[in-house]
Structure formats: structure tokens, C-alpha cells
Length: 77
Image (cartoon, rainbow, N blue to C red; front, side, top):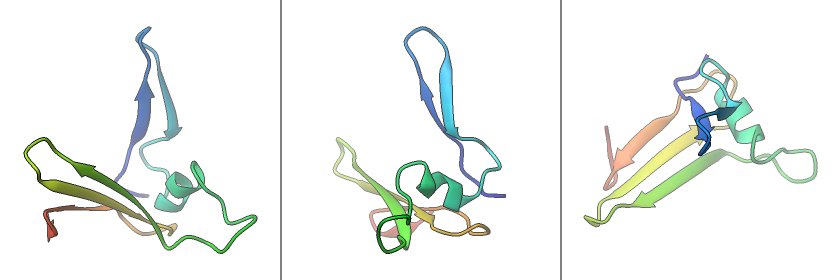
């Protein structure tokens, strides 16, 4: 069980969960990319540069038992 919950809220109030709370990190990565046709990924990184200039990175390992991590300006939070 991972520590992530990925969802897409819609304008009509509904939502779609391609990755539900409790799904593995590997399932989260598979929602976007599979290793069926290429080398397996090591992790999925979501990087956001805020208006303040701070850099936020969410790292999701390609692992059934791993947990996601967050860094702000290179420091783990």
C-alpha cells in the first residue's frame, strides 16, 4: 500500500481516480507508462516550479512496496 492518491476532478463535480488511495506506486506509474514496449522506468517525477520560484518534486518509485517522496528546493519534506 502506497501513500499516494491521484485523481482528476471534473467541472461537473465528478472525479476520476486512475490511481486510488492504497494502490501501489507501481500502479501509479503504470497509469501513465508501462514497461511492455520499453525498458522499465525507475520512477515517475512530477516537478512543479511555483510562482515563488520554489521547486517541488514528487518522486514515485516504480515499486509495489515503495512510497512516494516530496522535495522542496532539493530538501526532503
